[in-house]
Length: 126
Image (cartoon, rainbow, N blue to C red; front, top):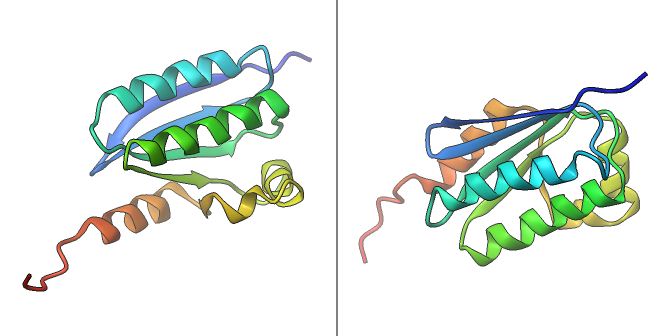
């Protein structure tokens, strides 16, 4: 059975949400990378939510896309939140110790809320 991979991007408040569905392997990783590139180009300091809840499998090339996205987002002064559900990707992040580097949430709404909360004015005077 061949899994169909799809990637979609939309805006949710101050965030760009990239949603991937299907198996993320070396044959489709360039599609995800290209969509993320477009999302990162559209904003100065990107606030990126990467929804991986529809991805049941991720190989080392796909993992490389995630790590590269984290690096590029931080270098641009932005923030990346991965949205994952319990399963293969969560396990992969844990066994590679990448769970210590990625900010992870359980659903897109929670990720967008977390992103928005840190961007709210603090109300303190300088």
